[in-house]
Image (cartoon, rainbow, N blue to C red; front, side):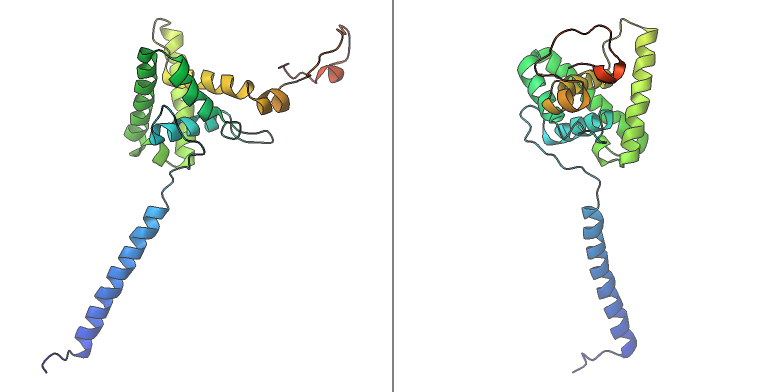
Length: 195
């Protein structure tokens, strides 16, 4: 019957037990708070992490405002399908290599993969790499097209060929009428580009 413990020992063991329970729940909570975005389509060419990266970059390029964002109109799905179906194998490899290099650059700068960075860090990184890519292309036109510029082109192509992009963002008339050469701008779509 020497298994009785004194009050001090009981408090110490209870505190250790509570600390362990708190730590385990805290770890669980912190794990659930990771900033990894959801994926809203099933990729056919990219793996899930690559698809998330493509989705987030596309959404940063064309975010949701009063018009649908890139994710809303299916831009990531379009890019995934386009790279799989239309790119040659060597071009697919270049695209994936560029995507991986982009991700590694974010890891080097922020200590996290791109999709694990905060939304502010992701946006800042896209803007920074875009500026760097434009400067690099201006300085040496013989360089291969940087990944971020390819992503921007594919995002714009996918967005403006989608129904919401063509009808809600661009001026769209399903059956164009007669040509009226001299009319006020307000009658000609208020300066919107025609789809």
